[in-house]
Image 1 (spheres, rainbow, N blue to C red):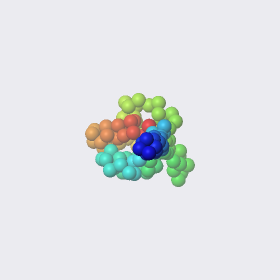
Image 2: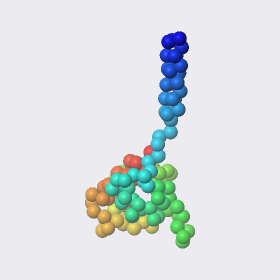
Image 3: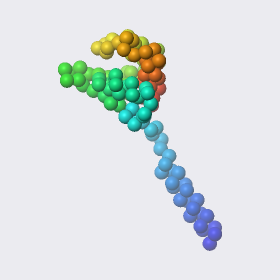
Image 4: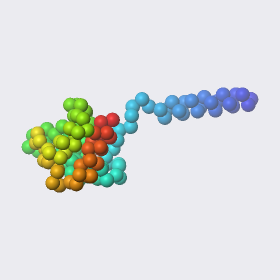
Length: 116
């Protein structure tokens, strides 16, 4: 009787752990993150790149790239920082609008958290 209960409990635990484990990593959510870097993204980047950085097409037909997939994933951290700071390819430079610390925070967010 005790052995049967232990087996049942063990089996339940294995099933529960298997259901919790997933091979897919959890997608970082800018909207759900209360951090300052996410706040900066919402204030400065989401208008063009979308609320979660997935990219979008603007009203004038301009296609703004995703910061999560595609060619952007190949960019180094220095490339991401330079793009934020200097702009280019249709993007506004933020070097006069954001502090050095804010640009570094956005770089870390975009380079490390959005590309998971």
